[in-house]
Figure 1 (cartoon, rainbow, N blue to C red):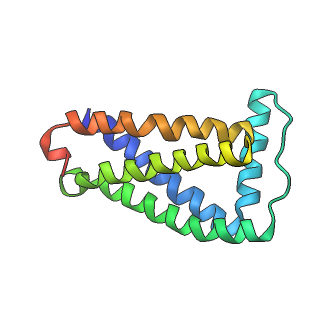
Figure 2 (figure 1 turned 45 degrees about the horizontal axis):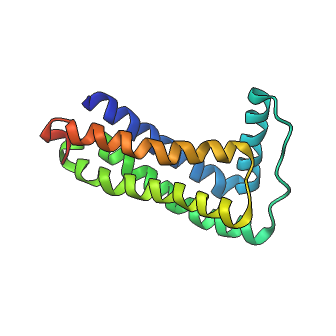
Figure 3 (figure 1 turned 90 degrees about the vertical axis):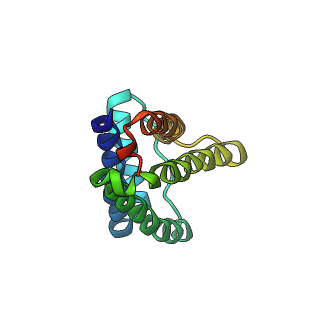
Length: 143
């Protein structure tokens, strides 16, 4: 159970660092657009989002730095759960809240590309799974 917990938290950490860094360097439109293209190739969809305006790009590059920080904290918890495992519930709360933010956006602004709808499922389903693994992990893994 501890190994699976460490793999999931570590995977989130790697994803956070890589996605956040890519958005900071290439821009949210380039990263999101690339994800949409890959999703379309796999799913057979042809939908693509319109170009993202400069204000949105600026805002998301700012938040990308926070995503890198989230990823680094996940990697720290995965590397040494005995010392930093207590951070896992807080990290999962943040990740879950991000998924809720996407739901609020969907309700208020409309449905995003299907790739981002898939992310909602991951962001709302994965934190409870990780929290269950954390809860039943040996005490030394919970920090």
